[in-house]
Length: 34
Image 1 (cartoon, rainbow, N blue to C red):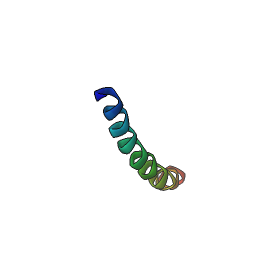
Image 2 (cartoon, rainbow, N blue to C red; image 1 turned 180 degrees about the vertical axis):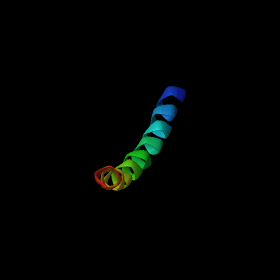
Image 3 (cartoon, rainbow, N blue to C red; image 1 turned 90 degrees about the horizontal axis):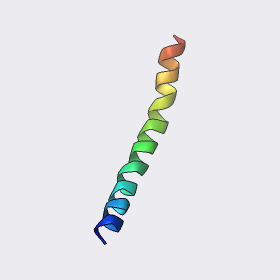
Image 4 (cartoon, helix red, strand yellow; image 1 turned 120 degrees about the horizontal axis):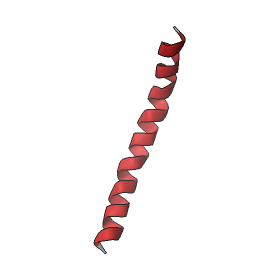
């Protein structure tokens, strides 16, 4: 039960992290291109 809760919590943390990375990745690519 605890393991399932941690998996759910990790899932909730991973999704925003992926969204933030996805939004910042183009900025990093633009910085590298300059």
